[in-house]
Length: 428
Image 1 (tube, rainbow, N blue to C red):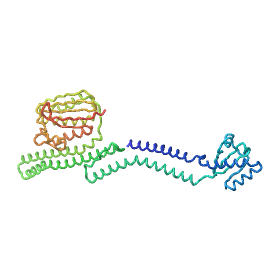
Image 2: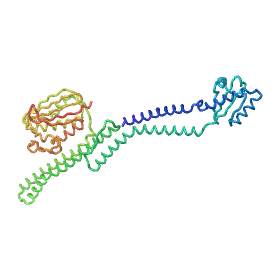
Image 3: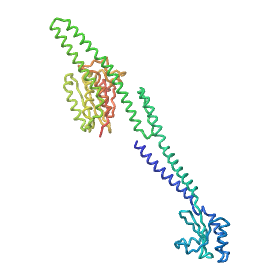
Image 4: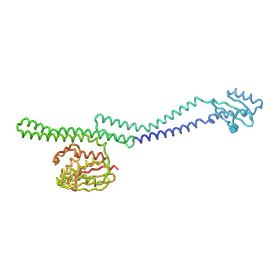
């Protein structure tokens, strides 16, 4: 929008300057007083030659006769009656005479050596109607030109706003794929990109909500069925030891349901954390060593060797959520690795790359684009973890998105198992 404001201001100032200059030039060309009264000056010069040819005592009467015959306000007066500076008195002797203006109009004064000490005065009336017409025409031309300039600037904006409006209407009636094709020639590129990001985010949230509702309704059926079975068995049973056994199993099922609901609700509110990120700076080696140390008991229990390959560079990110993402990747690797995991961290410019590889069976290629979806679990892989609802890698994808990065899955060329590549933008 800043581009639009600057363009609008610049075009307004430019149009005013250019139009003002053109109108002023036109006005000057059409309002030269000397040109307007050139004919009257010639007539006055002719009258002066006729008056000079008359005797001095008859000049006043002859001038009156000329004025009556030609219906002109012509007078013959003494020059000393004029309160004019010497410079203007000199101009009166020039060919064409001197033209002066007052509130009633103009008057033309002329004298020469033969007329001195008298001069001729010819009254010239203003053409009020013509001047008003010219002023109105110039005003209309100015505003018309200004409208053309403004229209040239605003028309592209109106067109792009129409595109945004059409996309918003499509989105409002349920077409969640409606997006704006961003143009390079637009003043509201930021607005268009913001709309596309908003639409993508809403579409993603709606898809996740649908998926979460479907997954929750599916996953909760098993513990509910177990509870129903245990309750029926406990009611029909008269053996106190079996009743306690059924109650213990029901308690376990309730714990599983509670854990499941907590995980689902935590993921449902995860998007709110995107606006609460806190960026901090640290060294990658120390940071990753701390994360690995927290996983040491699990690695030791499963006899897995974890190798760290890291550049000791500065890292600026939300360290809490980034640690959560890396921990999820390492936990996932622990669940499937046979004996070895390699964690690589490197920096290239403003991009920090984390690579987690394992020597496990890997993930089928047709599922590479699915593993980061919430609640997805590959059926042919049995997770060693006690409880898993397919949210770990979905959280990694969220954290990558928050840091303007990406997460990809492939096959490890070094170890043969899965290879996760997490890239984030280093906020310096």
